Structure formats: structure tokens, C-alpha cells
Image (cartoon, rainbow, N blue to C red; front, top):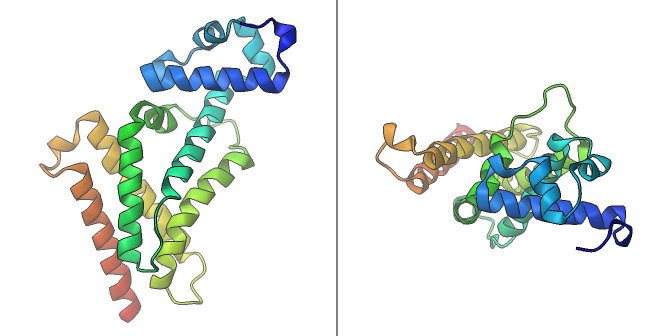
Length: 202
């Protein structure tokens, strides 16, 4: 490991986030301590607090990276303009991401939020970019003068899908149904689209 003087602040931040990602991916949220991250990069825990406000801030930045990775994964979906098909594509990619990055996904949602601290705009922008992908797919199901409806529908779908995945990852989905998470998610998408189409016709 290079000496402190050999790393700029930006380089140290990158080292810390890379180490945090490795720890989280391999061992989960419980491994994300200041001591573990600092040890992984060969610095003292105090160094981390010169880079981030606190451990919560470090985890927030790590989660921001996870959102970026998820966005890259979802960007591989081929758009056809057909909501049923396009949402199915996003669903497959999302579920695959969760399967391939279980621990990172759990950190993203299981790390307790600091209710006293405002969520930074850069983080909200990342979430908004992801939800925007769903909004664009759903928009043809709404009238042109619909303003907030596509955004609301996208957030309902996202939150519902998270609930299914959370139950599945915790092993509690079996207490609700014998269907798989994928089957439940597909049914959710089918019901949402059918409901929106019926509402528009009505």
C-alpha cells in the first residue's frame, strides 16, 4: 500500500469505496465498519472521516455506485415501444441484477436511513434516472395531458417489486405464496398494465 502522501483525496475516496464495495459484496452490510474499510486500504479509521461525514455517508456513496451499476444493467434493455414487452425486459434485467449482486442490493435497501439528514440531490438524481426508465415505458398508457401519473405509476411498480424481492431474499415469500419471485413480479406487471389500459379506455 502506498504512503498517505502518494494518494490524493480523490484517490483515497475511490480506494475506500472500492474496499467498501468488496466487503459488502462478499460479507454483506454487517462488514461495513470504518475499521474494516480502513484496514482494507491500509489507513486508519480517522482517514475515512476526513473523506466522508461518517459511516452513513460512506454507505450512501456506495449505494450511489450500486444505483449506477443497476442503471447500466437496465440500459441493456431493448426498447420496442410496447409497454408489456419493454417492462418485461426491465424486469428480467432487474431480477438478474438482484441475483448477481444480492449483498449489494441488500445494503442498498437494508441500511437504515438517517431521518435527520436530507437525501442529497445527487442521490435523488440517480434514483430519478432509474425511475425515469419505467416512466418512459409507461407513458404511452396515459393520455398526453397526464402529468404526474406516469411518475406515480413507476414508483408504485418499483416499491411493489422491491417488496416481492425483499420477501424472496429473506425467505419469507414462501409464507405468502408458492410462486417464485419472478412469477409474482410478472403477474404484478401484467396487472398494472391491464389496469392502466382499462382505465384509459374507460
